[in-house]
Every structure is written in C-alpha cells, then in structure tokens.
Length: 457
Image (cartoon, rainbow, N blue to C red; front, top):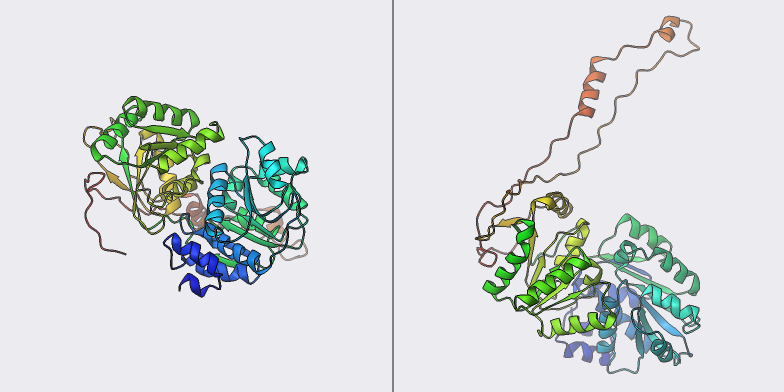
C-alpha cells in the first residue's frame, strides 16, 4: 500500500513525499481509513510506529474536505498530549504535513508566558495541540472555547493517566460538544485505558498493531552488572571507547539527571539534562542541541522522555532502572524508530535486582547480560527466573452439613464432619508455592558493541 492509495489530497501527499515516506506503517494503514470514515478510533501501537502521522494525516484531509471559517478563540480539532515536548513534536508534524495547505495550527503548554498564547488564539485555529493544565488555564481566561470543535484526539492516553491528568481530562470533557469524533492513541490497552475509553469514544474502531507489553523487535537489549558507585565511570569509559555520537541516558530522578550531565561535562563529554524542573526554554534548547549533534549525551527523566522523537537515535542507556516496569518499554522505544536498529543498554546494580526481575517478567523474556572489562561488580547479580503467573488454585470446599430439616441425621448436626484426605491434600496444594519457569539468560561473554550475527526472526 502507498499513501496515494489512502484518499489523501495532493498537497498532503506532496508533504509526505518530501519527508521520504511512500508507504504507510501498519497503524497508519489501518487507522487513516477509520478516521476518514468518521468513526471513533481506539488505537494501540508501540512507540515509534507512526502514531502521530496516523491521526495527523486524516485530520488534515477532513479539514480540507470540509473547509469553514473558524471564529476567534475557537478550534476545530483539539489534540491533548501529556508533556510539553510531545505537544511540540505533534505540532511540528502538523506544520510539516500541512505546509502546502492553509490550515492553521497552534500549540500551547505550560512553563512559558501565557499572554503570547492568548494572542495567537484570538484569530481562531483549525488544530490546537495542548497539554491539559495550560488548556484549562486558557479556557478559564476566556482565551479558548469549543463551540466549533469537531474532533478530539488523546495522544499517549496511558501516559496521561500515569501522570495524574485524569481529573483535568474529565473537566475538559465537560467543556466539549457532545457530538464530535474521538480518537484515542495509547501504547497499550490496559484496563484503565479501556475504562477511560468508555467515557470518551462511542462504538469505536479498534486498531492494535503490537502485542501487550512487547518491546520493539529491532532494539538490541542488554544489561551490564556494575556497582552503583561505578556507574558514572562505566558510562564515561563506554562513551570514550565506543565513540558514540548521540546517546540518550535515563535517570530515575531530576537530581540524578543534573548530576550525571555535570559529571559528563566535567569529563569533556558534551551533555545536558532535561526534566520537569527545567524551564521550557532550557528543555527546548537541550533537545534541539541534541538533535543537531551539538551535544553528545542528553540525560532525561521519564517525564520528559515521551516527546523525544529522533528517527536515527542509535543508543539508549538506562543509567538507573525505572521504578515502573512499563516505563522500561517506553524508554527503549526511543531507539529503533522508523525501521532503524538500535541498542538499549541498562546499568544494573545489586540494589536494583527486584526492578530487573519486574522488567523481565513484564516483557516476558530475560535480558542478555554482558561483561564489561574492569567494572565487574563486587557482588554478582543472581540469576533470575521468569515468574509467570500461576493458575489460581481453588480452595477446597467445606464439607456439607446435614440439613436441619432432616430427621435421619441429628447427630451430624452436633458433630462437625471430619476433613477428608482429599480435602487435606487440596489444602496442602493451595498453601504450596507455585513452580516457576526458568529461562537462563545467555552466559556467553560479549562486548557491548561486538555481537554475534543473528538470523532474522
């Protein structure tokens, strides 16, 4: 299938071709016709699979098919995103694909002055990309209204729930026209996402192009066991020897991200940190410098990670393992995007062994272990077994007592029935620990870069 087969107008196809794309990804091939049909959409796709274009392209087409003037302080399409970086990224996509049209778009988010945003909304916009908090602020100041809204898009809905935006989303829902098209995009279809979807989408088309909890196939995952105090020295040594030119490093905390960036800079490795406490200007500059290769290493926390979208990002390093196993999948999804390959390397100290176990259980497979010369941990990491969830064992039923209406067994009423041998056996089974399946990670020693060639799956 080609983009020309998807009933997209020539100006849109031209803009797509300029970006070097000719064939839609699976999420685009399935999602674009559904959006153009006017149906609500509930779509799950792994990060890096083209979700943004999956809703941007058909929305642009619908605006071209039904052009109408937008009143001041109004918007026809609203795109909600969880983070500033992701909002800016979506707006970049909208601007790129609408460059040969007269469709107007704006992006609003916190961390910057609100007055310039209010002024840009006075003319009205076709597409408004926003973070929930800033959108509500603008509405409270009468800078934006939704009388003309045709379409609502929730991007990264799972992340919005993780970040605690559910109350803001509910407030926004109450402000919108009841008659509208709704599109929800998420990395997974968790129970929470489905519960939220029931309050937003109506009789949706469901599209899912990724199995639950899986990682991108082209990401080469590995871990290096190392003492916690030696992690920064390992990172510096690795960057110096391998001469990686663009590396995204994840820290668990904001303080940790700042500390790592400073230690790298002190070692003459150009680095910058990006997290929630940084001003929007600083975050924007750091990301721009990273994309242009002016800095070699960008150190980020999970809250800033969703908006980092670089097609050819080759390396991701988990300096700290995340507290939430699902975030591991999102982190390593920053590499191996747009069909390219990528490396995801995690530094694991002994105090993170439980987090590693959670991650491996979540993705359903062990992660390859590598030895790095000179940084062997003082206490080796124990081998881990995959803890597949055991089947629930039914508790034995209590022996039935004689009916009080029966005259034939009055003695059974006074004396409780003895537990049978089978009941005792069942109780023993219920109290015993379930067996775990054991899948050993590879014992073969390899360097972080030189790996044996593997045949494609």
